[in-house]
Image (cartoon, rainbow, N blue to C red):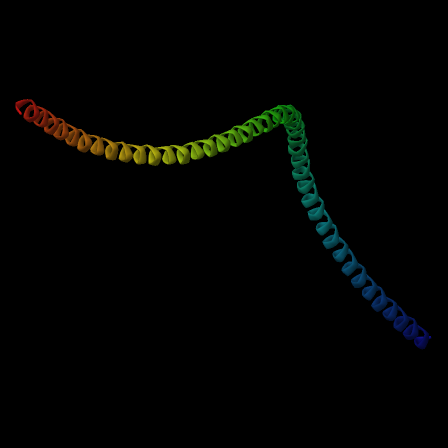
Length: 162
């Protein structure tokens, strides 16, 4: 019987050791689960904070979208006004091109007029020179005529004295 008791004691010790090992294992699991739970709670807190930030950002974005829609509507109105201004600008550019063309034509005519004026000035100068030559010849001939007239008068006076 002592063997049986020993055997039973050994078996109980083994069971106690196994139970102790199981308790330690379960305690380790509980500790791991508690740490995991703590980590999950921290993650939940972090995610809740993130969620709050995202909701605030979402509200900001909603407000921004409303503002952008309003700006887009204004932009559409500005676009219509811009198209009108672009048409006006195009008309003004066409008018400017036409004015530039007219200016070039006028400048060309002015250049031609300047060339003609230069030509006529040279012609006038040549005619003035020719006139001066004729005047000089006239004065020379007038002096000769007066000289000859005097000679004729002197000759007539001599003939009448004879």
